[in-house]
Image: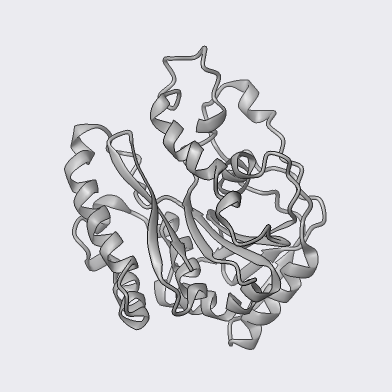
Length: 269
């Protein structure tokens, strides 16, 4: 059965695994619970259990699209200032080297220079949300990088190139944040983040797939775009998921408020 594609929020650092006895830490707050519940329920909403996952995270950029093809990736603890136990987390899912090579091949067939590598560990845009969604770590996963120029149209086109994987039992996931401005919190963020989210959601859920792609590629023209994303690396995984969706319908399947930000997740198909 064809898998949908997803754009998921991955939270802030190891927010879902903070020690509740540390109430003064800015990420130790029940506001993250709706997002955690959403991530924990993802697999149950799929038409069938995926054979593998291809995930693109906002925390990995390369000069060309690159897929990690290691068999047993380690974890890259690329967050800072959190309690010691959050640097001892484990998520021991197997890699998916055959999927990685297949994905790189599809990108090359579409005219994108692409490569593979096996040294980099999975960053927290992978293992934090996936540890919630798949605590048993029992589905192989290959991580895809962003392309360093952050060209939205190119990432949408890359998603289109990867679309055949959906019919091969692969779940394509973009992992980022629909709002990602770490300099603003609370009431300063509330109104503009809501206006941004409304505009982004209207573009993502446009029923005309061609119009949807144009509007989302032009994300920087939406209200409060650069307030929401001073740099767009956390939004670009959405472009890959949207491109891989083809003509499938899009819905906003998650909404929550954290740190004053309105945060959304989207499902295609």
